[in-house]
Amino acid sequence: MEPAARQAWLVYLLRCADGTLYAGATNDLARRLRAHARGTVKYTRGRLPVAVAWSEVVGERGAALSREAGVKRLSRRKKEALAQDIDAAAT
Image 1 (cartoon, helix red, strand yellow):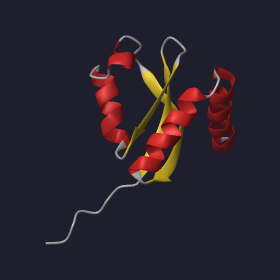
Image 2 (spheres, helix red, strand yellow; image 1 turned 90 degrees about the vertical axis):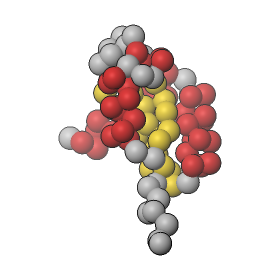
Image 3 (cartoon, rainbow, N blue to C red; image 1 turned 120 degrees about the horizontal axis):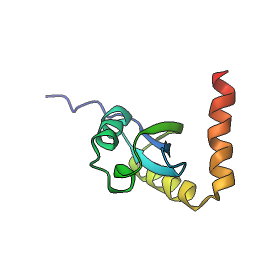
């Protein structure tokens, strides 16, 4: 039996309804967003709805967790700059 194909890990920022930003890491963004929407994630539970403001494919789990920690250490201004880069690329 072949091992299951591994999904790449990614780091993401969510913009919450109250304007705060939440950073996380996952290997299945759609599943994680459903968890946020259901209110099973403590931080975002009282800040719904949430929307993806930024995401970056990192690869391996360890690298994703390191990048997530780095993003969490960024100032709000720098986190907003990440989100703006995504907005500019989409237009």
